[in-house]
Length: 129
Image (cartoon, rainbow, N blue to C red; front, side, top):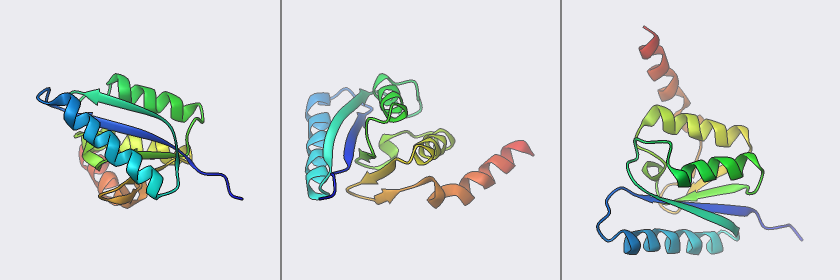
């Protein structure tokens, strides 16, 4: 029998209004998705704050536990829950891919760096000009 993949959920909202309800809703959606995909939830992290800041405690916890090999799959509601700074978001996805971790969203399916590589390379080339 194949062992279930270990999933980590990450939720983020940027506005404090109804923080508990919206975060709770995101987490429930991700836990339901994990069950639907036959993943075993190994842990979860959450943040309340701007998507432009990549030094958020919950996201840092995701990076540490990923590097420690504690999960195989990261579940997020949408790509913009990781961050709103596209180059930093792409670097994050690249890091997950290098660790062998797949990123999934119930709304967007599997999300990988390779899907955005051409766009990212173009952005980097533009910055270097």
